[in-house]
Amino acid sequence: MKKYFIPLLAVTTAMFAYAPIMIANAPFEASMGLVSKIFYFHVPSWFAMFTAVFICGIQSAMFLFKGKPTADRIAVSAAEVAVLFGLMGLVTGPLWGRKSWGIWWPWDARVTIALILELTFIAYLLVRKFGGPGSEKLAAALAIFGMFNVPFLYMSVNIWRTIHPKTSVVPALPTGMPGPFWFSVAAYLLLMTLLIQLRLQLEERRAALDALYLEEE
Amino acid sequence: MLKSLLFSAALALQPPPQTEFVPANSLPPSEQLPSAPLLVAAYTFVWLAAMFYLWTIWKRLGKVDADIRTLQQRRGSGGGR
Image 1: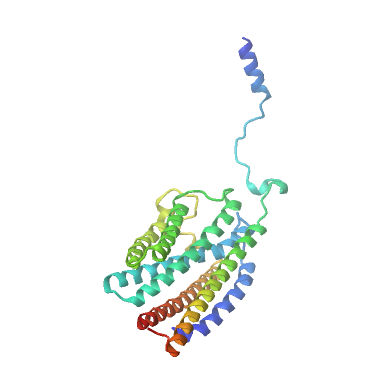
Image 2: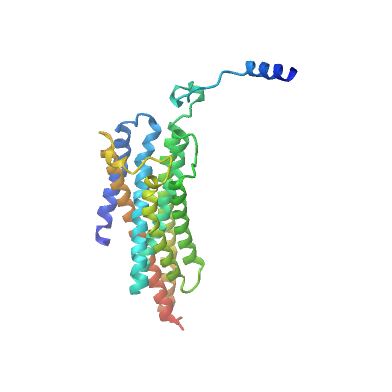
């Protein structure tokens, strides 16, 4: 993965530089107008968050059941990145909602579950930081719980009455919108991969430092 | 009697009730919320958050590398226990 880091960084930078041009040229959603363009970076940030959450959850399960330390390092890296993308979604959503719905935060099923998911992964990081020895196993269990929250969050708009549009909106985007949207999704997923990779390097350096301390004792 | 007179006078003074919602885009411009600042704020936040996170990783990497160097120097000079 490390040998692909620089080419991936170049591609991601180019995509993020070109994305605003694509978004600017994309058509407006008829009823919402200009503010609907938040869609092109609000929804992709959730895609990136869900992917990071799944990476964290699966790696946490591998750490818990197989005891692989590398899996734990990937899990903590993905958890931090998941919190970052979740924060992007939680901030850009209200900015869109204020104009489209007239309220910042509707407290419907989707935003409430999204907030719970974000808080779960903040709790994961706090448990790891302040939980003392053995806290990584407790945190891993929390990550698995968080991962199972994602399908509920995704399907919430179809199950409960909510102000959010249903999941059928994205597959049925009108002409001109799918291109910039999927381009943004790809750019966000690449950024997520790069950030996890970079954060993983930090975890590996920390493991090397711990090994040096142990050797010294 | 007086009570019913006052009640009918109060009813007569009331504005006619609304029968439907007024679409937000047909409000006068002064009543409408501008879209551009919200869009710019959302885009700026995404960039700032990503840049801030990158900066925190870079800072933490620097600290760990400095600790590794210190430890290696200490071992090199025979300061280890």
